[in-house]
Image (cartoon, rainbow, N blue to C red):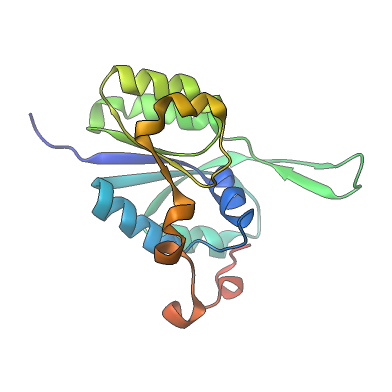
Length: 178
């Protein structure tokens, strides 16, 4: 059998919010290298809501080695806080794309802590195609706990993967990273 490599399917909002909730910033370049070195990820698909004006962020992510799959976003005013909310739910796209690519990868690395992906994780595991589930935060869906042997907590890798302006010489603000 020809080795095709492993693919990562990344829920960008879950990743971003999970890391932010722990008060640190992910170095996406280091994270992409980690996925390649540790799990043999040859393609890393990042599912992300498209927001006009974030081109610098998208360029940075692509230069870091991510293949971006955009989803249109909804913008609305939160009734309680009266603040503008941007919602880009990528769940369906991530599941669909992982199935479209199914024959092209050896195993999948799913990056999310969202229980909405339970059916995908369950299917991949039954097909012997699940490599790892990388959860961005120690607080993740109890639905995924059944797959504990596959789970890697990104919080345990904070020192290895956190962004440091001293290391890169370019601040996240200059790169357009929220």
